[in-house]
Length: 352
Image 1 (tube, rainbow, N blue to C red):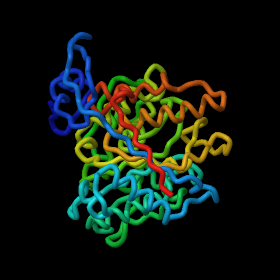
Image 2: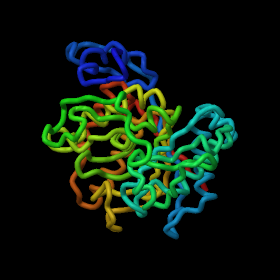
Image 3: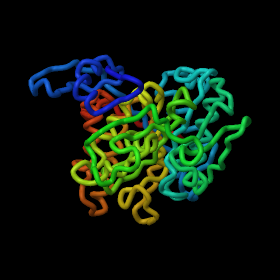
């Protein structure tokens, strides 16, 4: 792929993606691009999504850390085929890694990546030999982290925690460039969205930990959107019609700055939101899904999550969002993963 001086533009996608994406390990089935509708590109392997459920974990309104850790172990065992916590996490991480845990605190204390989930991830990384100070909990804005009980730590000891703004800043040399946006909403960087220094300079590996929730513009915000729009600036321009965060959500995740570092996606669906997201505070729009979802294919996880949220919406007389969340299907077209439901193995595990 033509990437010069870490610049990755919309032109690069159109010009080079059909050739270079054929080798991606997280495949996307048949890809049909500008070469013509009848062109058959490689068919990739199936994807697996693991869901671990503990009925009653949210009964008191707050999960038991011990139970969350047990769910985390079960999910990682199923995902990796290993039988111990250390072996499972060592399949994806080494003691030399600096691991960024990308959380989603936008929804406030009621609808955030729960600290109990993050703590169980940290325990797994420790078991794999990753040092505490080589673990960074991060998101775009530090004040969102503070508001959801993630104390900031920029020091030389302990697990670090900070945002891109105002702490880490953005990398002016690494950006996503696109004209598929609302020109009037462009910020100081114009048609470019700069990547966080956390992504480009601070970490060697990323764990993406979104929350299961709907999104009034993009349909849902799960793996793809949480990672993409939390990793770059100048994102408001992608929201209005006719874009609705597509194709930017998928294309940003395809950028080597992200794609080459993401190792794991874990969706926090202990509590979920079916309407009013991404920052709903209305209790009636939330429900206890009581599950954690695991996988290495963000498209497949998002497809499963989309179906679950859409089903809950229909049960509550809300309109379907399947068509609105088109960025997920775009992810398959770009080779980020599998969208076709028949090619996704959904493994459901009950953790008592």
